Length: 133
Image (cartoon, rainbow, N blue to C red; front, side, top):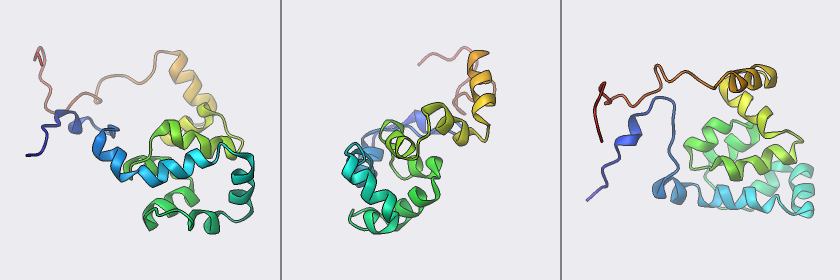
C-alpha cells in the first residue's frame, strides 16, 4: 500500500523522501566521491568518462553535465550532495541556489536578506485557509 504523501502537491518543490533517496542513490554517491581531490581531478579531466563509471541513469548523467541542478533534484539528487558539484566548479552554495531560481547570485542574496520567497503561490495546493493537519 503506497504511503499518503500530501506534501507532493507543493508547487515547485521536490521533497527528498525515501523514494527520492532510492532513485538518486548512485547520483548522490557520485557527488560524495567529489570530496576527494583525486576524484575531482578525474571528473574535471573527462566528466563523461568519470560519470560513466557510475551506475546512474542517462538522464542523471546528462543533468550533471548540463549542471541542471533542478533536474538532478527531480532525479533523486539531494542538494547537500549536489553542492559537491558546485564546489568542484568553484561555485558557492549561494551561486548554485541563485542558478536554480533563475536569479543572479546578487538577486538571490537580496531576496533571502529580504525574508525569502513569498509564501503566496507556494503553499500546498490542497491547503485551505485555516485547515489543520
